[in-house]
Length: 306
Image: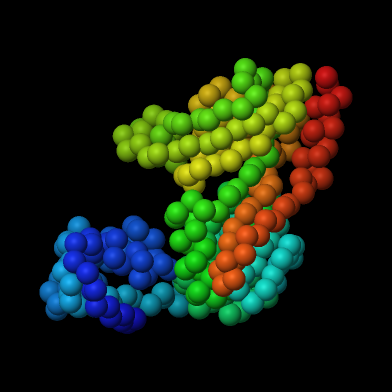
């Protein structure tokens, strides 16, 4: 059993929100589950979801350590490091690489490669996702930042939550856009019928905003720079699909027709740029990942079709 104790300084904060600032390695869902399962005590009594705290309240959190079979096994995997120091890593993730183990994927993930090369991150953040402060989909390539220390983890998590980290993606969308720049403001959530998909058709919509800019137009497609303001699951893919311009090669959200299965070898979505503040110095930093060769080849073919 892992036990953590806290004392509340000021009144009025909800318990789950208080714990999110103290247990950054846990997601909101994990914190709420721990409260419901009686793993959180306030002044010696079982806590209630949404409970308001008073100054001086004593909080005890008792968490089960991960089972031996759930512990991640380090694996030697090729990693392309764009930047590293003693606080953080910036990597160029290839398409096809899963960030962390999940349903149906138990090995060969990015975090297992990171643990092999940087074993210290085992103590950073969540035991299931050590060092991970954000994700890219399996089929998305590009720049990612990883925390090497708990200090960096907390700082980067806060920057993401406060939307101070700036991300730019490159995407090839089907069709042409009437406006060269615009904002897609469509709330997203789980599809009302197909729970494995994200959709604008949802019973629990959450704010989702994407800025787009046309970079280059082809006969049937458009190269875009996408700047997500929020970070919802599959946000860019669903936003473009919902506006009638799915991303080329997107087999889940409509970016592949019969011709497209040969025309686009993979999802044309690439995390191009990432801007952040260094966790210790506060210096503004920006990193860039060049478009992979297979996506460069797609653009060349689109140019030839003009």
